Image 1 (cartoon, one colour):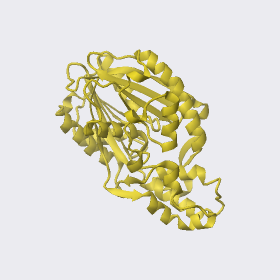
Image 2 (cartoon, one colour):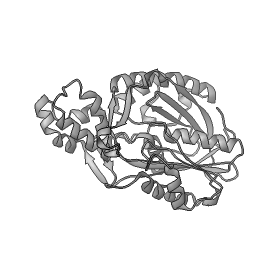
Image 3 (cartoon, one colour):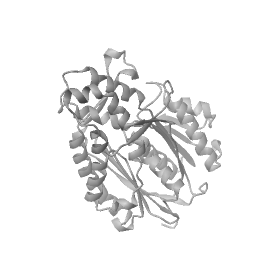
Image 4 (cartoon, one colour):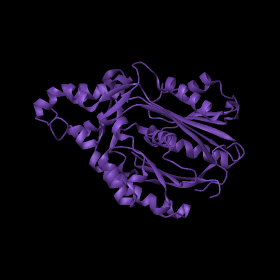
Amino acid sequence: MKYNNVYIEPFICRLPDEIVTTDALEQRLAPLYTRLKLPYGRLELMTGIRERRIWPAGRLPGDESVATVQKLLDAASFDPNEVGAFIHASVCRDYQEPATACHVHQRLKLSQQCAVFDISNACLGLLTGMVQVANMIELGQISAGIVVGTETSRSLMETTITRLLTDTTLDRRSIKEIFASLTIGSGSAAVLLTNRDLTRSGRRLLGGVVQANTHWSHLCRSEVDATAGGTADGIYMRTDSERLMAEGVATAKIAFDRFLTELNWTGNAIDRTFCHQVGKAHQKLLFDTLELDTAKNFVTLPFLGNTGSVALPTAAALGFESGFVQPGDQIALLGIGSGINVIMLGIGPASN
């Protein structure tokens, strides 16, 4: 897919104030560590995550998304009446229905002539939303659209700790698929896409590719425990981390070769990358496989953990804000999500 009339304005993120260190998590799991004779420090050693953040208890994802989109509109000095599509695209949402986007749209008083809906696509939710908005802009259906998401990990963290401490059948092998849940952090991110007439950034969304490998859709599953009344308090996740990493990177390799062909790029032509962030082993394998320089990648994993669908947009927001990206840079957004799905998008200057 290629675009001629789609531009990326600011990526924006907001982060919770409360920090939970990996050391603090391991201290809470002391009975498990003692029972299974696990060495302290193994979680940070395996993942490269020293801390993650969580929103205050009781906060709905939509509440945080309202503040994030307002920050986006203020930063872009953008007229909310120009927003023709509004998408909430995180894994976490307020209710099963209506769409969380409705709550956020109403609070922000956006235009009534606006397509308002949620998208769910695991850790690729916001990237999927970007593709949908870009398609609408390219077709001339709208002039601008916003994609936002907020991930909240408090409930998952607490239910995971409870399960690890109370299920005495767990052994060193079976805890592996549960420990991945302790890497999850919270955050909120949003992005504004416009047509050529409304852009101020001059950064064009050039195009990209999608790649599916749903044979492996069982490798990472998040479910709600029916014994908890079907509430978020009963959420848990099981992940075959090693197999997911291997198959995800293999799928990414197929997608990346197509991506370079689609945009007529070479790997060396990429100045900066922003990726979904899972763990240090995943990053090393991915960049070795794609033959990319890790120095060109903006990393948030050590201090934010895996923030799901907002991980890549948050890295982009912080990367742009810090000056990591310079005018004229060619940027690759490399998204890999459970499913397995891959979305890769290229951003460049308007002259491209």
